[in-house]
Length: 512
Image 1 (tube, helix red, strand yellow):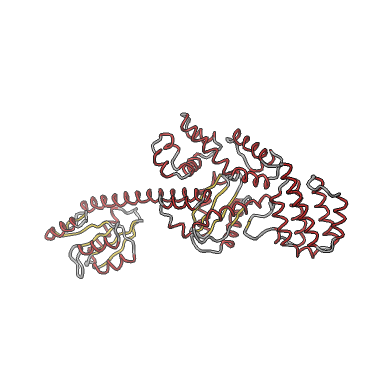
Image 2 (cartoon, rainbow, N blue to C red):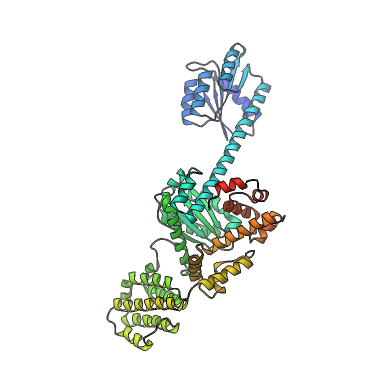
């Protein structure tokens, strides 16, 4: 909608201009304002953004030339049309020298008015379209570099990015919310999701697509992050089906904290492998907050799984949670508690991760200990022995990760998930996700996405295949989403990459 201001000390003249506007562009959405003199017009311009000013030359308090000059100072993008009589033609000439491009002689000829209006509206629309293109380009560069910084963040990278684009907007970032779905949801429905969530939340948000099943919400206004995350979690699972997980990190105070906050968010999301019934993960909301009657069963069950999978990292993590929640164990009888711990001890021996002591002796020791702290000390010693033994045996994750990577290289055109790869190497999804990131430096979904993009670059540069064909061969079903992902990854469209038209531009803007 364009805003038009008509200024004339004669009410009849203002009505005439309004009538001509409505007659010439009856279906056009104009917001038309009126003022009886230059001073009133200036007061209005201070409060209201105006696209087009129609003003008479001769008016009390301030003539049309003065008003045009003040309007340009207040609203630099404003276009002005001067009305002047034949005897005031010299005023019109002065206006033209002052930068006013359009004038109409009085009495107004409707055909002359229509031609002038058409010319000035075309100029305004062309300017707005160009501004929109520039803004879209700036928004893309902002999202492109922010994504790079989140994954590769270093002080030097931030310094180099700030030399390429204006990152003052990053100072307003308050926090991050990661959303993960299933069935390539964001490949097919990202635009619908963003539009509807933006309408639901009424918060200043920016969105970064991290993969076919992952979207990152970047909050640019102050809010209660856990409350907002809980609201988003309820809304998205109600609106699109119960197949989404939401993780919200801590508040962010400055851009330098963003990469660490993002890494913490990825770790939080890994809890979905261990607590599939949960949909929302927040800092500090761990298993120790489970219902008392479930706490011991849940935590010891996960520790037993860690032992079976040689997942020493998560075993230590769950043990720390057990230590923190030790007070909950007073709700159980001592016999039941020691029985549960004796089963955990059996797991160590069944998987040959405890040596040097007989199983019967250790279980007897569990029942003879006088306090829960002594039992926890025994378990801690068994974990330490297991960690040392794994180090001596040279058991590692390189073979599992290498096998998974080989599968990705051969099947990248197919739908691949963490569960598929974990099953391939006989590990739990949670542990496999952990060791994959530890070995490669990237989570599974990002590794797959990057490999697909590199294959797309090879096909674009080395073949004449159509983009729709390359899209399918690299594991995407939605061409628009593929092109968007490619642009986010490479800094240019697939067509531009193939033609080499922006090769120099990419090398200047893409930061590795």
